[in-house]
Image (cartoon, rainbow, N blue to C red):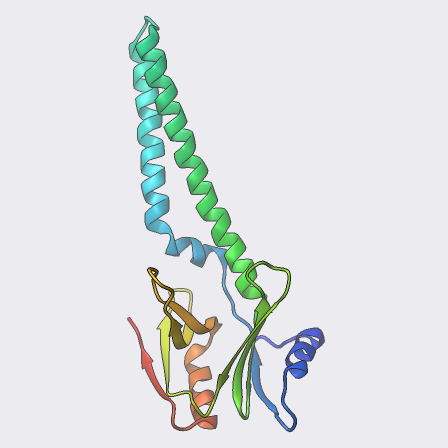
Length: 195
């Protein structure tokens, strides 16, 4: 398990209640490749169209010795579509890299009373702090990932008209061991494994 630095541990200690003790601390381990793997369908779709339009560009350009307005217009449309698809693919990969960096900046801690998450705010200017009261925690859902990490979901947020957003500890190495530690401190907590 990855140990926290002194500065990170100080961030956790600032949030402790009087008499509260840290029993476990850790950090997520999210690689950019695993984040890109979650977007594989979009990346494949965009690359398919980039290649298709690029191939069409080549066929039209090579097969037409006379460059009239229709040929030039077709080439321009195919070239623009190919560039947009490649640019969108790059944006998906860049987003995965940035999301991975942001997630890896989080700190997780379990005390004798609460589960804490501390990290950068959504806009990057402040600090995000979330706590889960151990006494009211009923169930943990573990979502395993192919890279060996797992998400420990304590509850879901339901924004109107959008997919549910998991709240908890994401991309946690040795997630099953951490669940057992949580259940040792808060015995009434049930655990389930998704997928």
